[in-house]
Length: 298
Image (cartoon, rainbow, N blue to C red):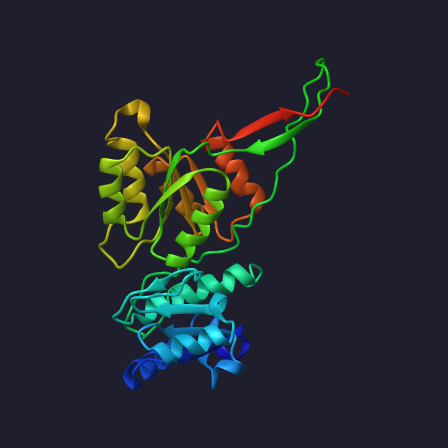
């Protein structure tokens, strides 16, 4: 697809050294075989998204003064309170593009960034983007009444009951967004940003549920399927405490579903996550989630 037909987003680069700014702008231009295209904006006032250097106080102040905190990928040691998260230094253009994809997808789920590779140079093969989309929740429908029973009007309530969930994703925006949604349902959520950390946490803590991205980090690192296999085949707290595992991925092909199934996953969600599918999957893997409270007799 020619780059001039791609959805294009203007990205302001606030702060950073001249070298870092040039590197990011060049990467935007070279990552040209995608369904979402980023270009450097001329100013903070004329941009769709922002990448800001939290180590430069004036850059951070400019973003906050402009009210653009929700549109910004923060890079540095101190992302501001209320932000969706940040990336540590050194600046990694691949990870910045993944976080920009997450911001785009949260705001415009109908414009799903490509799950194909980011292309730097023809001979260079970068990991596929794994994109994080709308996880907004709403109350689901009441459970259907069974025939032959007294009709009792009910309201469906969802409660995680303080059960422990592990969210594994290398996107800080994706982790925080899913964490917030699960906590609103009453779960206690811990996070891991790579497969190695997830294995360590699974070894030392009994989780009820694990949500894991299929692609985690660079080649040869522990991926989501390996995390799933570890959780299902080597439960640290006995077979009766094996967690349910839900794979969440931008990889939509049937092959990926088969691979996840062979790894032992209990649920498979593709991005963008549809509200009803998200709740239905939770209902399937956590039988204690859905409760019905009587409101009166009909």
